[in-house]
Amino acid sequence: MPRRGEGAAGVTAADFAAALTPLLAGERPDHLAVAVSGGADSLALALLAQHWAQKRGASLTAFIVDHRLRADSTKEAKQVARWLKAAGIAARVLAWQHDGKPAGSLQAAARAARYALLAQACARAGIGHLLLAHHRDDQAETLLLRCLRGSGVDGLAAMQPSRVMDDGLALLRPLLDIPKARLVATLQKRRQPWIEDPSNADPAHARVRVRRALDDLAGGDPAARSELVAHLAQTARNLARAKAALAAAAYDVLRAAVTVTPAGIAWLDPRPIAAAPDEVGLRALARLLGAIGGQPLPPRLDRLERLLGQLRSPQAFTAQTLHRCRLLPQKERRARDRRTGEATAAPPPLLLVVCREARHLPAPQPLVPGATILWDGRFRIVLTRRAPAGLQVAALGNARLPVRPLPAAAPAATRAGLPAILGGDGGLLAVPGLGWGDLPQGVTVTFAPPPLA
Image (cartoon, rainbow, N blue to C red; front, side):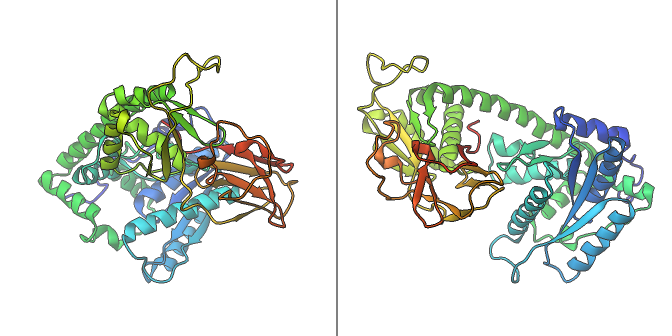
């Protein structure tokens, strides 16, 4: 059998530019980052990105995560940094600080730590675009892994070429339609060595077993394997289109069903969701609960299905909690025309207020001048450098507000999960979601949850 990369064409500068440019959506960043593990995929990406950046007068920084899970990891990270610097690429090693191997899924914990370190490094450097080296073979393996887990359309759409995180960092995967063999050939042509992680051959990991299953399905024929991987990647692209169509339909349903206030509270007329096809209704509910609860991942499907069934029998609906949200019937509140704001002739048979439950809220957190934080996954708090020092943000909880009229759109039961701005002495200064108090100069607080669709 030919060695990896043998007989494959390397990735050219034109190939790479054609893959990356659409992901930038017209933006012209002056500084990008690339995540480099030291494997062939990420090293090839770094070299291709360096050429692309040089041609456009942009800077590139490579971040190398040292997971410290193997005895040689630190030495390998330093070697990768030397290779990159020799190629003219600025490189920094990011060490994962931990005591021994994490409990639970080692790969999941390492992946979460890697993304956290990379995001922090990009934020400190003022970089808004991070390149990742996932390629076509990775996409095929991801599709099969999610099939085995019983994933729905969203999961089977696999990895997306671009994604903007809650903190504004754009993750870009320009190699997603390029086979691994071409990346290996790119390095071989440049006589650039790389590091093989032994865990990539350890059958204890499900991804390694899936990779070997692809070899078996192709009967050991590299050409047949390449064709099989291409078909699987095409399936993921097809499902990504279906995902986008369903998301658009769910968004239309949400626009008809939901009004969200600046306090991060939703008024829900359940009729549009109840009348929608199951897949659209479930998706709309998942987006709504994720936004109000500040959760980037959806609730369990069986719980969503139960809730949808209850919304279709509104007479029996009772208050409940799901996905860090409270759903409270508000039968006495009259519906309002979305254009005029005037009360309609008759209230809907059931109206729900959806708000953050008053559990698992963040501990009080200092607010540093010049910083931006996403509090509880829902509220973006931005401080200019001239903002006062010593401020804190904390959940309002059961704090008693001085007597003052409050908006009717914030029932008492919804207030405990709101962010409150505290002064240096711990005194309550403002509850922005309620329009209460005086927000300090240089501080803005905006409801900015995971997107509804």
